[in-house]
Image (cartoon, rainbow, N blue to C red; front, side, top):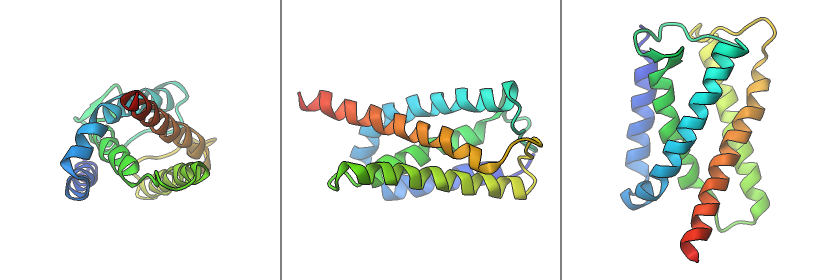
Length: 153
């Protein structure tokens, strides 16, 4: 088992707990759970159905080929995404912000691949991950916005 997965996950949890006020975390938590579950489905499809890549050194901490620590690390990622959302800026900046987080995901994707922790299939290219990540962050953003609208009613 590679220790990078738990170290990465624990680091993100600690960073998010330090930076994000507890009250904000309570608001984000249900959205984070939904987003992590959506991401787990996306990972399942990517790993087991279209076989774009596989994780190396994730056993025994994997369920259906999905590393548990990778899934856990997405929780704080979504929390940091929502916490840093530039809500007071024009709406178009939100989409640039979503793209920024998707690019960070692609960079991390390339890092894991270069470290040999997640070898890619021959047909897969890292830029391909941008579009599912953009969609995932956009869904998280949309859920958050809908929840805010419902709370303001």
